[in-house]
Length: 461
Ligand SMILES: *Cc1c(COP(=O)(O)O)cnc(C)c1O
Image (cartoon, rainbow, N blue to C red; front, side):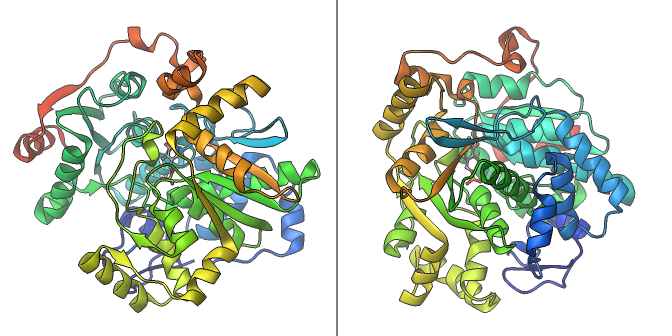
């Protein structure tokens, strides 16, 4: 399997090179040259596979340059850190199927992909005799999942910047209580945007990037999307086993990574009726699907902070398919975006969008109301991101279809919002209990490029 860029200006690369490249060198995103289409027999053969074996089948279709025995070991090791033997179990509450993606070490769905990416990095760096310094900015979830993905791994250092005192308490503790020597937490005295701008500047400093072999873990890495394709199959099989048909996946969306994995599963031939793209007040993607209006707005802060995003980086991958795999059209669209802050679509394109997607915005009051109502009916606590998807499904999925709602975080991770909605502080799962009494390590630095750069130079591999 070779990988190409959405902008069409790289030499096709194998899976291993695609993982190491992250962002394509022409500024586009990497995609497989073709997406395999599964026949009925293959789907039937996969139906009863446990999670790890299913993951091996899916991933090997796209990663044919890693020997099967090695790939199996990498996958097994990645999911050993999950506290549920099904890895991503599906539960049923009040007629709603909920796909629980929060059983990994940091209690958010990002673990499903970042556990695998961490192991892949370690494997590939060892094979190539190279080292990597991962640098990233986080408003909370990605940072801790990335740290847990690479803690203690050989030939990798990780530097994660978070805005000092501006993440939730649990989110900060999940990062700073990891004491492995290769983990460096930087609390920058500034905002998340300051952190992100510093990281961008470091990556744009090409001599610095080369010298320290900077690596990225944001959701533009193809391996992250690929790892997430697996649970769409897994959940579809579980619900079909129980007689569910016409399945609609409801996906709380920020950077379009998670829902794009669902789109890949659909293109592979998994019979998904629709993908429901659920947004909070940051609803550019809902406006696009429902009104054809893809124009940039201001980022609004909400109770589902991991979805407080305007420009979804993975959206470019979808545009490549919408534009009939024509990289020149993708380049045009982003040139348009840079000039005018919007992309125009014609009626035929919008009709095609609506064959695959439906969408709804769920505002903060509706989100909190959904957490409260769902708990009254079922006793089950939804985190605010999951609640956005559940509410959107309640409003939009017709009676003859079966919704599966992706639960992207454990409610204890966003305990304040859950308490505001229900009056109850969600109990900490075992992995979090006592976290506030653990020793922690973190450097508090000014949000200043020169200061951060000097810090990295001192500690880098
Ligand atoms: C990252 C995140 C999302 C958004 O996922 P995308 O892949 O960025 O669309 C939703 N919920 C939670 C809890 C997250 O951490």
